[in-house]
Length: 411
Image (cartoon, rainbow, N blue to C red; front, side):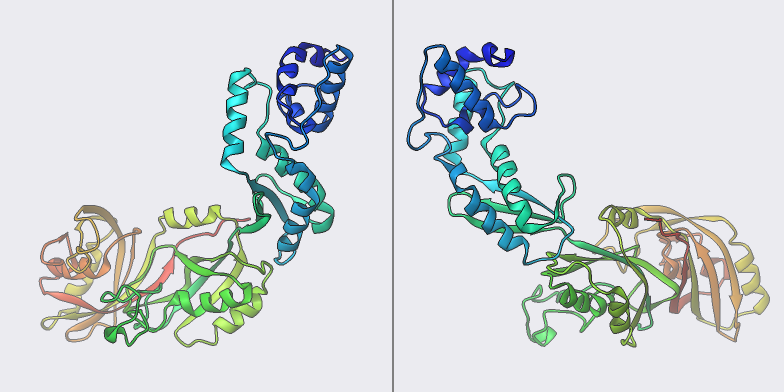
């Protein structure tokens, strides 16, 4: 008789007396003995008890698991059928059991002091169902980061799939000054549809997100798409140069390995936005993109409220070299952002195309700088500001983002 068996025989007798099956008897001592299944442990303990003159026969239907282990083939087939409907490189099995079974098991474990040796019924079921299902699914099991989790409700043999999203990184250019970065629900109806939005539920007919997201959603046969941009430009600003980094998330994709070249080609049929450098990335990149603080290069077409002197404009630009701004939340966004004073840096400014009352400013700034307010001053909410230095009130008529200084991480 193995040592672990003799050491636990007294407790095993109390459990066996409850009429439990070999699975449930062995599971109470799952952390004893090596390279054994719970079923084998139960069989060994019952045989040892019999040798010791204590013969306990399991009840016809186990009072704890209610003979769920006899249903393993049915559970495995149901899971395999569901998992095989979707694309994935790996999978994992989960299950739900009757709450009363979990409650009974917890009470028995606590009553007989088995906290250090048992494993939950759900854990054994997950493992045993997975063993039977594996040959029918022909994909690897992934415990850490599964692409598909098949959860079976053991009360009804119903299977639900939790499919991990896919994440597609890239860069976009926005050539239109009339579309937002992301889908914008109607302010009046909150997306339900009303006369204000002509029943669309949206403030704008489309967005950078929807142009590519709707195509990707159809290709992946997913449920919904989400857009994670590295910051955003104003609706009336263009995003040029090499584009703004973004990640497109597709939830519940039934097809994972979509053709990104085809996605890019279809999305780029749009004249409003363009997309490039598409690639699959892990979920962790979403956080990295959201938290990135990339410096930006802008071009602003500026209108002055009077004639300007070329040299004065140049002198004003020269004065802004590595200058810190105190920027209070702009009036135009204070309804949706906290009223704070933020420290931002303008690294340099250059002037081009200087006319009588218009000129272009090319400027590089720290991430999060409000360029329009830097130029206008926003009634004193940004100090120092360009209008103040020039001595003439100015405003930005057109704004383009020319470059975002960010190196995408390697996979």
